[in-house]
Amino acid sequence: MRLNFISHIPCSYDCKKSIAIGKKTYNLFKKYYPKLGLEIRSILSKPVLFFDLFKWIVFDGKIDKNMNLHYKKIVPPISLIDSKLIKVFSSGDNVKVSGKNIKVYKGKNLIHKYQKKDEIDGFIIDFQDKIF
Image (cartoon, rainbow, N blue to C red; front, side, top):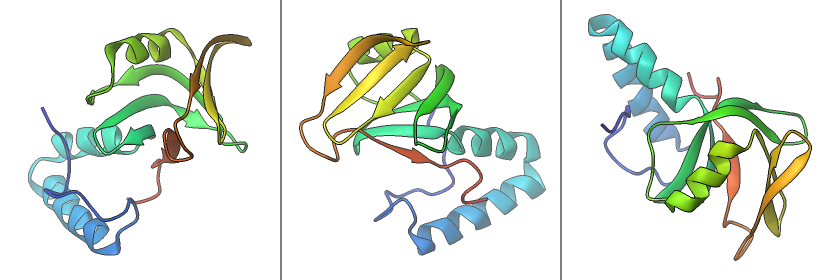
């Protein structure tokens, strides 16, 4: 199931028109289907590691001041990302992203290093409490 508050792909993650549409839709959910509205909001408020428009991972976690992601698990929805990468991230609990690579750790132990193809091949956006 695809859960969202807008029916299009926005021009950017902070597109003002898309955010306005999303807020209106969320308010309708709050009024008529509050439980589902809160569930969708919860999913959409998680940190996301983007590789491209169709390949990303949503985490149940928090971003620290250094933009390192500390997480408990991967959460739905699942994108078109390679299942091997999903397994790697599922076995870790924190991620560090730099300009050249993404490192996945379990505690202090490095368990995987993903070599980025370019700067935007893997970046984190923290949507928590930014839009709603």
